[in-house]
Length: 178
Image (cartoon, rainbow, N blue to C red):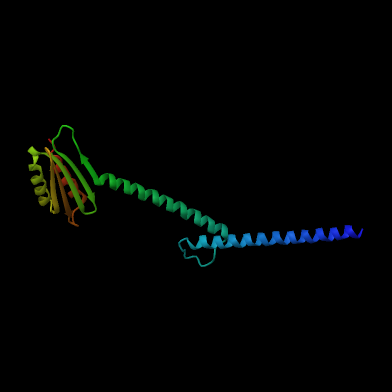
């Protein structure tokens, strides 16, 4: 009987130590979650509310904020895609001896002209168009390979210039495609 009572005492001691361990583990888990909630809340923009919010409200705020950020990212990507697609305008015609590519980056304008030897006047006319549209030609160069001439013109559009200026320049350059 003495042996059985020692075993029972031993089992009850194990049982109480297991409960304490579970309680300790659960307490640590709650403390960890509390710290994580606090960190999450610190990442949110501050409201003028002076009273602290309950944790479920904090989580709702974080969820809404993340959704708002995702929407903002999508909008910015679409804006970027629109600007990139509108900033590069290529005009290549298989039948034309003149090929024109216009790229816009802010107030910088880069025009690439690919012509044959017989159409070198296009370069001079392009420079004239830039001058007439008050765009400052910063750099212009060319390269001749066989019967093909590659002209590159770097221009700076004035700050007062609008997107209409770029459209006018592009439209006028397109007229050289034969």
